[in-house]
Amino acid sequence: MANPTHAEYSDKSLHYRDCLHSESYIVGLITSYLMRMLDTYRPRVDNPRVLDIGCGTQPLRAFLENRGWLYSGLDVEQRALNVKYICSLESPFPDDLKKSPYDLVICSEVLEHVADWRQSFRNLADSTKPGGRLLLTVPFIYQLHEQPYDFWRPTIYAIRKYASEAGFDLVDESMLGCGWDIFSTLLCACSHPVYIGKRRGAWRIGSLLNYLIKVFERRVIPFLRRRFHLELKGYYMVNGFVFCMPDKQLAASQ
Image (cartoon, rainbow, N blue to C red; front, side):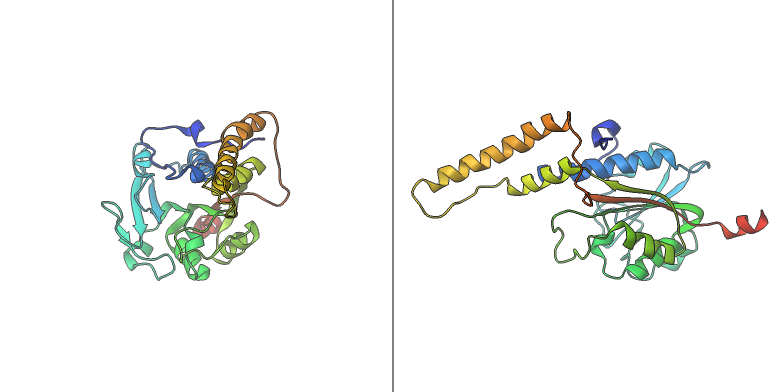
């Protein structure tokens, strides 16, 4: 089945947008997954509390608040107004955060930028209340970004291991992105002027090649995508996970 795109979840309050054309494929996959999981695993309580770790400019804030969530953001710096917690995911979290954990913790496209995963997953566990959920995405195939703080492209098995060690139970696991998404993203990375040697007229060949790459990525691949599913065995773009923090008191009372 083809992966849904962000177009299926259009909403004026959702400002999770790609900055470059080359990012449009991975951003579409991430946005679609987040929206589906937020709809599927919404807590059955009034005004549930959500913590957005690595919130950046808070692209999800208006979307969540419009749906009744009580939103808090966490980031290493104040990139938007009213970021509640300024700290690193791999440093010990403040006591007031650990004393008041959240119904839902979102950690999207953050873990590839932190080196200490054991401390990071301990923090994720401390900030998720018993019975609460952790919604997580991490790239598997993607270009270097936010250098030099780009450390990992983990497999599903690495994420399972660290989450399990921190006490989480697995709820949902998805390998997002088909062969067309990968191929298109790679072609986008080639879509810049190509210079071939120093021969006379080489720039014309480079310009033609650049044009053909763009046409193939923007015209031919969408045509093929509508007619064929392309799977590259063992290759995908993004890890998508939902974990649950077990409620031990509830389990003991049953």
